[in-house]
Image 1 (tube, rainbow, N blue to C red):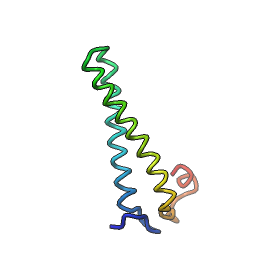
Image 2: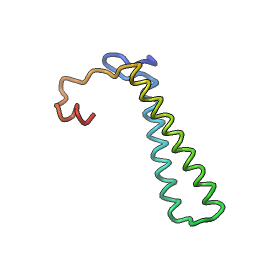
Image 3: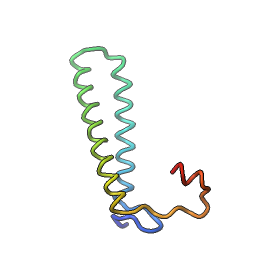
Image 4: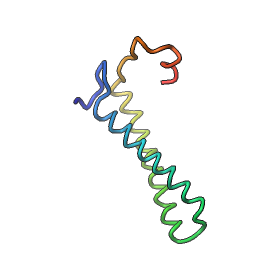
Length: 89
């Protein structure tokens, strides 16, 4: 598999970034929901620090992913996609 996107398929880097970011966002959301119930304890502060560091990591990956999308153009839309699907994508 290529690192870069082709005309018909996303590359390894774009796919990896997608799934890593999905896992990080879901994990950060889960940690945020747990934080609601913990109150202000020393353990909660450690978990809060983890939550913040994961958020900064996601932000950094978003910037990198946007740059990568500019460098390696995404594959063309399928002809079977409707216009509203292309706009939502």
